[in-house]
Image (cartoon, rainbow, N blue to C red):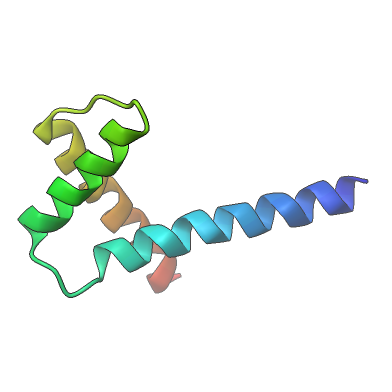
Length: 70
């Protein structure tokens, strides 16, 4: 049972990182991307200011760069 939970967790984690990478590396202006991320979060009921979205994008970018370099 623990193996199945580990496999599901790894899959979901990979899917989240992959989706983040796809959003961050898409050929789109940064301002448009940040607006799109904010819109998606607001539709999900998560209220974020522009500075919150900028901080989220910066953190995801750093995390992705760290994974690529490892």
